[in-house]
Image (spheres, rainbow, N blue to C red):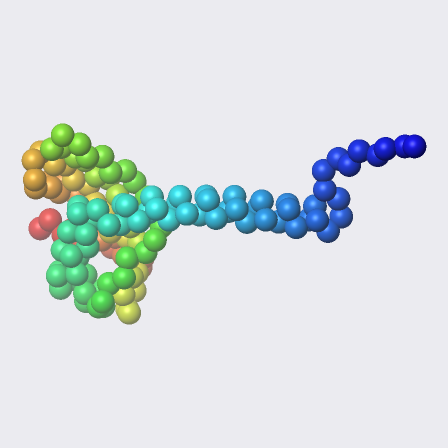
Length: 131
């Protein structure tokens, strides 16, 4: 009597297991990226910067309203012990155009001090929101 030992999956079952593993990996990586971008987008420093951009007539003239923030946020945000630093670039768009909101700020205590806050327009040009 010959006993054959099965080694792993074969055929359609192997394909199904491989596909499910790929979906799980993509879901985990995608969920992590979504969470990181969500934290940056939802931070108080970025939300205040976006509100300032929405109130600036030069930005609303160039991009229109409402402004929609994009998801591909890059940069860094560090907070702790009443201090913080932010260096973030976020795509924004409106009915008339799009660009990037560039934020650089530091915090000592409760208030953020913006050292750079501008909208870089895709068609060229920059709008300094600190002036």
